[in-house]
Length: 338
Image (tube, rainbow, N blue to C red; front, top):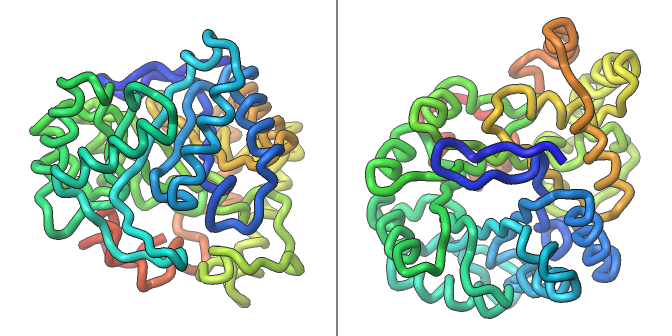
């Protein structure tokens, strides 16, 4: 397994991380047995980075990871680097009600996560979004206190803009920024990615397949009643245009002897040695496909062909419904989002 270091201050992790959210939330029913088997397969293949959130399935995802880890040999279990997001507020009906990143709330969230995960520390702990009522300095300072107490190893961030990242880094070293980054979501290249590079902060990139849209497996006829039914990129009109980009990418992938998904993942990994793609595989066959992306080397000609197939800004529709953009500090003061 190839490894990468998350920036200057973060841990060394596998070159590909497993995002576990879809095993519990937002993408329709998942098979628990298959989910656990997929986590096991990832760890056995050398994947060390497991990404979750305490609000994924309102705790279900952390319990699922605990179940998976508890049945492994100690050496395999201890190799896992668990990254946890906190702060998103839910209700019994599954609704969303803002973010809470007050220091007192952070200590409470962490206590529950440690119990659900069955761990004595969290490797990377990060607020899911910026709490508009709490300065980022206070939030990071509270996590830094937990680092000093031994309950957290590294401080991470998520979906923050360049100015906020700089403010956060002035309080405590930051391991990585978790943010959406894919062939059709490239706005971070303008200011956020250069800021992370200058500060020695790594990037864990989620949405590398844009929720399956650029996986090469999605079709116009694919019906969905999950989160994607609200996504502008999956709406009629936009979907046809985006799938045309996928077909252009497929031609490049075929020439390279790869699948569309593998090429899309390899492209993200090729953008910076401190960028680690997260794949949301819920089944072992999808995980196996993603793992094979690690063997793909892209030269300048490959990258130029990919750029011609899917130019920056070519996607039709924004990456989130407009109502959710107010929660994204990463999108503020940056014009039209992609």
